[in-house]
Image (cartoon, rainbow, N blue to C red; front, side, top):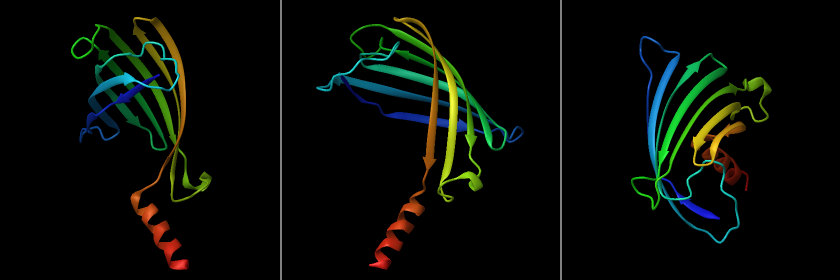
Length: 151
């Protein structure tokens, strides 16, 4: 039931003395408007314009990556109401080795995580999972080149 336009910026830092660690921080603004699509807002999710600030860390174990991130979101500065939301969540990512991949030139990533949120809807504990395929621009262009060459 809502339309979101959400520009964001993020930075990361990998300390030279600790190459397995990466820290990151970011901010975004979420401009919310009504939509003709019927929907239900998620628990502890702003239903108004908001600002979010996120920080966290990634620990690199090779094929596995541990992450921890925290986010503070508020509607106080740009929204029509004043609400504050807090979340924290650890996750584990597995970068699937090429020998198990369906398409070997694509990096497949499988992840699981937990998320705790506090906000106007109270406390909520949830989980998440994801499957992601990372395809490079070079791969797409090579496929297009190969397809036009055959014709």
